[in-house]
Amino acid sequence: MTDKRMIRDWDRFYKETEVEGMAWFHDSIDPDLEEALDRLGVTGGRALDVGTGPGTQAVAMAERGLSVTATDLSESAVQKAHLRATDSGVEIDFRVDNILSSTLGEFYDLIFDRGCFHGIDPDKREEYIERVIALLSPDGLLFLKCFSDLEPRQEGPFHFSPDDIKRYFGKEFTIVSIKQTVYHGTLEPLPKALFCVLRRK
Ligand SMILES: C[S@@+](CC[C@H](N)C(=O)[O-])C[C@H]1O[C@@H](n2cnc3c(N)ncnc32)[C@H](O)[C@@H]1O
Image (tube, rainbow, N blue to C red; front, side, top):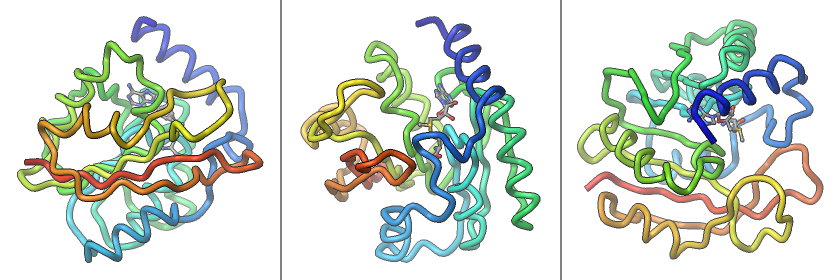
């Protein structure tokens, strides 16, 4: 799919749909994100929420004291996420940005990707990884949540095994942990997912 078409499709979806009904909508901190922040003692620093969508996780990270930039290629998503942050009383630097051709010029201590990478075409995955590395500080962390190959539904995003993650990310990242979990949202039952903690080498 071309980037132009991808942007148009996502933006139309956010324009025409209430975010609360979206499969990935989870109006509090993702439990795996919370567990990883606690385990690693992350209480501050610069975080990027890539593919922020409704912005729930960007808000949750800001509420935990992180300085958050949140991006999405959909302008409508960014507008809706911005309203959520304002209602929640937190300040977040929102930008319309395609991670595959990102114009962000800063470095982040933590990048959280909850559902962006697993939707990216296989032939663009290397490009995604290059962009993420370029945005991470040395020793920076990537928290990656994606559908697991244990998820039986075939429609929707791509599915990954722990070995897939090691193969894609292992050269540039130290694999800190890969956990089998679920993707909290509005689908029943919750889709099976991986939560990966990766540290830039
Ligand atoms: C499955 S949704 C998850 C949204 C959000 N992270 C959450 O957990 O609620 C994936 C999001 O990634 C965004 N997205 C997809 N491809 C992207 C890209 N190349 N750059 C930036 N955002 C992208 C979509 O617009 C969508 O909001």
